[in-house]
Image 1: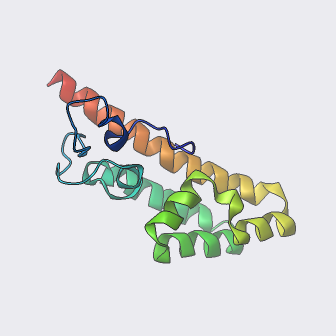
Image 2: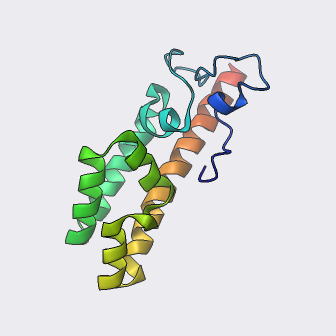
Length: 136
């Protein structure tokens, strides 16, 4: 995902019949471009997985005030581009750099765990939905 080569519908439109690159995840509206942003943040078919991740983030953020501050700001007021960048590599954000400088790698490792879990959860949920619909 970080390299920009994750096979989304938007990317695969170049070699599939889906020339528009519309999201093909079953139970999605079928009206939105199947981009990485759509997959990670907006696809209605993956809303349950996103809700689980938000709940996990909220639970983990209670461990430390600094985590709560960083995760709260990411969840509540970032642009789509910033949120996706945070999910893919949070280490370049100034609050995360300060977190590492002040507290070491332990809290930053928690952030990496949370962001990787978010991306992995969306990928797994998508695969699970596709598998169920393939057997239907």
